[in-house]
Amino acid sequence: MPDLLRFPLAEVRQVVHLLFGLGIAGFILLFDRDLTLAALVLTLFTGFILSDAVSRGYTIPVVSAIIANLERRDAAPGRGALFFALGALFCLVFFEKEIVFDGLVVLSLLDSVTTLSGTRIVRTRIYNHKSLEGTLAGATVTAAALCLLVPPVAALATAAAAAVAELVSPVDDNLVIPVVACLALTVLL
Image (cartoon, rainbow, N blue to C red; front, side):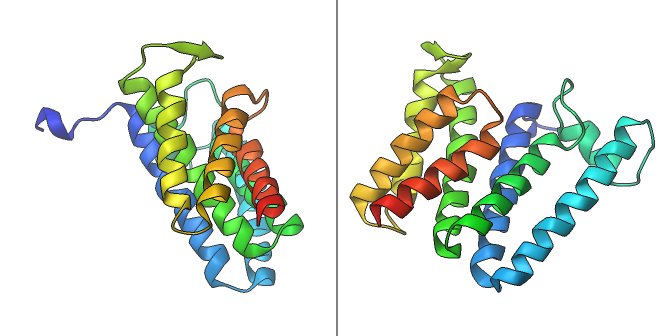
């Protein structure tokens, strides 16, 4: 396999995170609120059962392979995906679905671009093993994309607030970023 096609596991994980997140955001935007709530609850319920089974040593076709190849070694099986779905569910219960769509776009882009940029061009560590370059790249790409969905001032303020939340969050950022983005957008729009 050519070297160009070999990517570090962290980068593959972030591309999956980006695609997974944008898929959930699109699902929420396209379908009825009750259907999306039911789908997220079902996803969480099934995800927790599968995560528990894998953590107990059971091999589940496809699921075990995905977790073995994409999950961080020190994390509970499927932890990131479960937190993403939980963050999406929380936002969908408390915010309008159009705001939730934007918030999940923020989460998908910001988290992925920050990590990908931070691991590639890290020069200045600023907080919690995160880099200034990654944080700025994530905020910039997120703000640019968000400008396609909301007014520029709201896009910039939301991207900045989410980037700060991602940087300093004491808990998993898949829970914090969408809530911060949805709060900012609700206040600003």
